[in-house]
Length: 370
Image 1 (cartoon, rainbow, N blue to C red):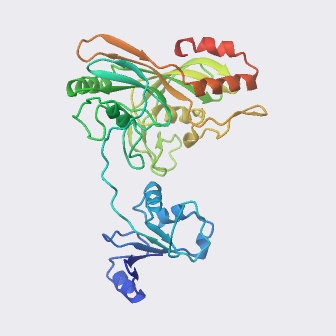
Image 2 (cartoon, one colour; image 1 turned 45 degrees about the vertical axis):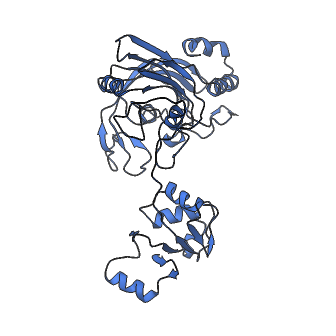
Image 3 (cartoon, rainbow, N blue to C red; image 1 turned 120 degrees about the vertical axis):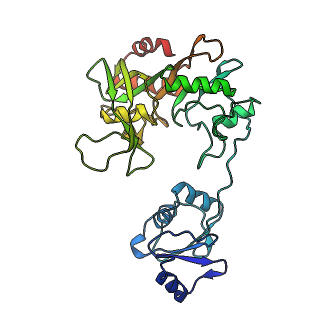
């Protein structure tokens, strides 16, 4: 049940009843009354539910990320005491007060974060982004981003776009590593943005996918849109026609070439012709060959080769290995490469050992990317 509490305690039942009659505050909806904390009561059927999940389910205008932020800032009380963790399991009968405060305004601020620079001139800079780093600030990621790190180097970045994304002309997923190109001025930003839109930028990735691909090369052309049920995912139209279609699907094309088979996995070189959100991950998942480590799109949490369990890969096996572009001022063709990260090479070493494959064969297949 949802009600609202004043700063001095819960409203009386008669007051709540009047509000309900006026349809200002139905019990079964998360209606926002500015500045008024919400009073939730867990029922016996909520026993065993996590506190953060319970609040997010009751207050539908709050994401779990926002609920976690409110808990961490002491804005959630559980039976009169500040809740310490969102992972607390309810017993049923608890009274929960949620004080909803506005999020602090996000800003792109300089931070001292080390970066590996792959290429730099007066117009652009190319960085080897590590897995785990978000490109720019957003909900749940106010700091520690690539933009924060670039500003921390004292760089002037283009300012023509979103103020939270200065210089950003394309993105990599948080758990994807590799080459990312950033514009230093508005003229370069405009030229690069046009090049990406016209697909004049060549983007090459290395991915390890589950299963053995039957062909040596292939093209995946499936439109991609927001998954209507799981909002953190993207989806392709379902062939069966069952279920809701993805929202605003857009054309997407991915070309791939097999580099090597290792145990029950396939190492592939991937060329992107479009730049849709999660494109490579969604396309290979649609083929029933999810990217290793990508549990969001169906990959195993712990990959096994026969009876051997491999160490957990705490990221996706997806790396932006090469990016080719035309220098926005001189017109010269520039190609930037990022070597395969150590954690991915180490995972391949364990994979080869489990599959009884010589490491030299995989190194030879990856010679251009190590």
